[in-house]
Image (cartoon, rainbow, N blue to C red; front, side, top):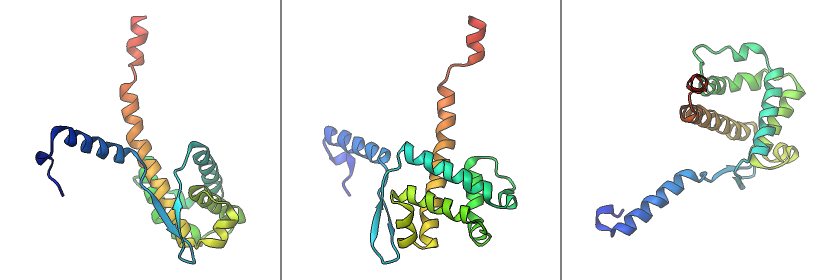
Length: 163
């Protein structure tokens, strides 16, 4: 690997800019189908995130409430992490076609395919490998971004007293 100190200054700046851009761009991820075919997971846009959140809400509504009793889960990230460790129990306790349909719908949205494609090409392990990392990453992104955004907002109390 080249050392930055041996490069002209404009090259160092270009290299640093490229590193910053790479951090902003989503990493390409792939999932293998049951036949071994590698499928790229597309970038998930807001429309698909909304569909995932709706399906997740429906899934949570039909699962046994005991699965969601999490000790020490104070943030969305810790809640999702706690739930991810219970996923085998969740999958094992599924008695509802609705729950299975919602899991399939979430996987379909994450991979950008329809539910029938998911049912015919992915196993339960592959579906879990799609869903859990997506949910954990989104929860982490939200828990780190929201505090930054709220710090940049003007203090509402100061606005009221100066008005």
